[in-house]
Length: 292
Ligand SMILES: [Zn+2]
Image (tube, rainbow, N blue to C red):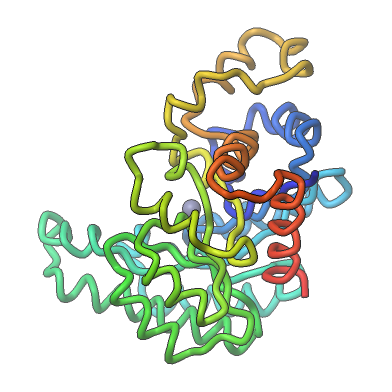
């Protein structure tokens, strides 16, 4: 079995010191591809250079470029122009536009930052619209962040009808919402949410969906898994040979790409097919989203 983490912020400072150990561990666990979305103009180059540095590794690291709705404060059209330019320049290196999207809780809380909720939605939608258009122009898939925003995202995706669609990252929601995205050609990112037994709605949705519509992701270093599954140790041999200091740091991370295996194991308990069949199909889905 081979695995791909379709969403990991590997350029995050939380990983910088232990990156070689972490990638060696991923390799041991057959996590051989990691897709890294960018989040704001100040990490575009970081994400691109990280991917370049690991170009010859057994583990391939693939960058994406985009502006996340959480980081729009102080950004304007000049940043969108900057994004277009770097996408043009790096078109052959990147595998998607992301992460982009709309976030309802950010809009709701805008007032505490001196902006009306309506102005915040407008700002978010302007950036989302521009980036969907960029994906269309460049024939790239998108990685979409959502939170309390399915009803706002869907009309945009219907309007753009992106040829290569993309991934609804960290999907949580109902079967109907999932179906809406799948009908537009999107895959749903299955992450730590399914490791929480209280997330019944999302678990039941994922259970009913065809394997062809799912991909795995950790969103590390954020989105920690439930203690219900992290209780069991999966860190293996190599790490134990490293100095204790490194061990401590890795353990204290909220989430790491090696947890992809835990998420896969949980998915294998809620889907009736055999684990190797599930893994095989998930890798095919990754191929279809990013590499065709
Ligand atoms: Zn993310």
